[in-house]
Image (cartoon, rainbow, N blue to C red; front, top):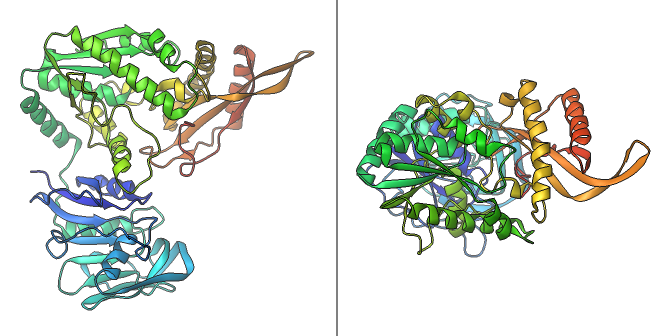
Length: 509
C-alpha cells in the first residue's frame, strides 16, 4: 500500500502548495476538507493541518474531531492549524497587535527538536496571520520564535504533535522545504518512492483489475491530460479503449485536424465528431461565465452519450481529470471558495449509463507531464500549453457567436505561432488571447474605426495554481500587435495582461 500524508484543508490559499512540496519529495499526499476526514488507514503516516482565512476565536470556529489522529499519528499544524492545536487544547489565542504578514526571521530555534533539524538561526520564514498564540497549553514546548512572534513553533512533550505559525510551503520560507522534509521523512518515516514510473506501474495494474475486459470511451482534447490518460488506459485494456475527439467549434484554428493527425501512430482508436452546431445552439445568448461552462458541459455529455451508444457494450467514460480540478470541486462542500465549476468532475447524470474512470485524478499538471514523458509520448504533445475545457468560450467575454470565435481564432493563431517562431513558446506555461466585450476608436489610413479590443495573456507557472505574467520582449509584443491589427479584420487595439495569480486567475472567465 502506498505511503501517504493526509492534509486537512481549512480553506487556505496555500493548501495546494503544501501538497506540491510533498510531491516534490516523491511523497504521496492527499487533500481532504477538514469536515470530511477520510478513514485513517495504515498507509497514512502523518497528518498536516493547513492554514485558513478563518479565526479560532470566531463564532462556530472550524474545529474537526482529531480523536483518531492527535497522539496516534505525527501531526503538524500550520498557521490556523497551529492555533487550533493551541486554542482547543488549553492554550490562548488572541488578535495580534499588528498584522503579522510577510518575511520574518527565526531568532530562536531549538536545533535538538526533530522538526527543526538543520534549520539555521535567523532562517527566513513567511508569516500570514491576524491572530497569534499568546500562551501554549501544558506539555507544550516553544521550539521557535521570531522577534515579534514568541510562539512561532511549538512541540508537545508527550506526543508527536507540532505547530508552526509560519508557512513552510511558500518559497519565501527559505528552509521551509527542509522543515517539511523533516516532518514527512524524518518524523513520519516516508521513504519517498512515489515516482512517475511507480505511478504508471501501479495505475496500469489497478486499471486492469478495475476494468477487466470492459470497454472504455474517452474524450480526447489534444491536451496532455487526456492524451496521458488515453495511453495509460491503452496500456491496461488495449483495443477496448475507444477515443472520441469532439469539435465543439471552440477550438483553436485548425486544431481539430491537427489533433486528429497527432494521434496517428499512437495506436489509439480515435473518432472525430463535428458537433459545432450543437454547441453554438446551446450557447446562444448566454453571457454568464458559469452559464457557458454548464451549457458546454451538458452538451459535451449529450454528445458523448450519443457516441457511446454506437460502441457496443461500452461501460466506462474515461476522463483526464487532474488533482487541482478535484480539489476545487470538492471545495463546494468544504471550506474553500469555489472559483469555477468543472464539467468533467463529479460524475455523470443518471440517464448516462457509463461509469467514470479518471486515471490522473491524483496528479498535478507537472506530474502528468513527467508521467507522459516516461510513457514516451511525443514531446510536442507533452509540451502543449494547457487549454481550458470550455475552449474559446471563456476567452470571449459575453455571448458567443461564430463570428467572434473566428476573430479570436485568427488572433490566437498569430500569437501562438509568433511565440513558437520566436522560440518563446517553451518559456511560457500558458498563453492565449481574449476577446473583450468593448470597442475602441482607432485610425486606419484616413478613416476612423470603431472595432474590437483583444487582450493577450501569457503566464509562467509550474502547476497553474500560482502564476506570474511573462515579461515577453517589447519588440515581440509590438510585432504581434501590429500583425494582429493588420491581418484580423474587426480588431484595432491589442493590450497585454500583466496580472499575476493570485489575485487574477489565468483565464478571464
